[in-house]
Length: 255
Image (cartoon, rainbow, N blue to C red; front, side, top):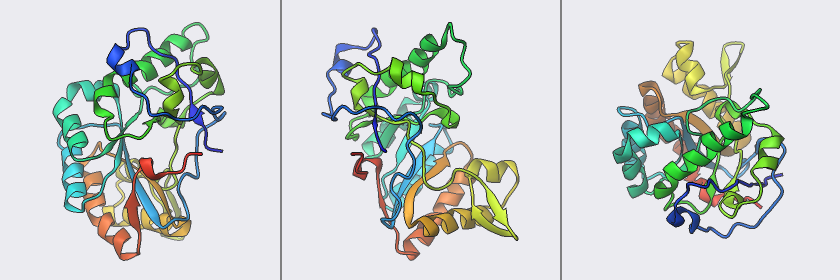
């Protein structure tokens, strides 16, 4: 069940941040990550994690602009602070911004004495950093680094007006892992492709196979390495040739 992530307001948030309200209905937070997000519609939702990264994110933006496609960027707070021009370009070109934590630590096996401080810092500090760039969003979106999550975090972060508007933790439908059987790529993940020196074409075949099997969905990619931008440039026309259209996180029915 797709449910809404509740966050506590960080005491240092500015008044302007606190006034942002998307009017999302309160719901119980899912005990785990939200998956099976948008399959079966023959639509693709492109998402990019871990940026922005100069020299890569701008290439991704060039490709998206060429094809008039909007994507969702799950950004790292520290990278956002270091790259305001890239963030402004994302917003100016109509893309959606998601919260992917402040420093990309795994939110699991945390010290019982300090985990609340860590969750506050990683999620709420990141929210304050990305707030100026959320103008294209219908909701606030959160994806946990490494998909690491615990229901106690939701129980801790559950009674705030800004927090109520967060949807997440959001997973993906396509691109989460690499699977090869009898030489055929049944799934692919860009980061794993590059770490194992798999070619762009072979990596793309895994994405395309999974997208076709699921009849679309949320694709996970990373704007960290130039190979991912090259993969995107080749994959968009292939997806279009297969009859897929493109939508964004704003188009998902989260109820």
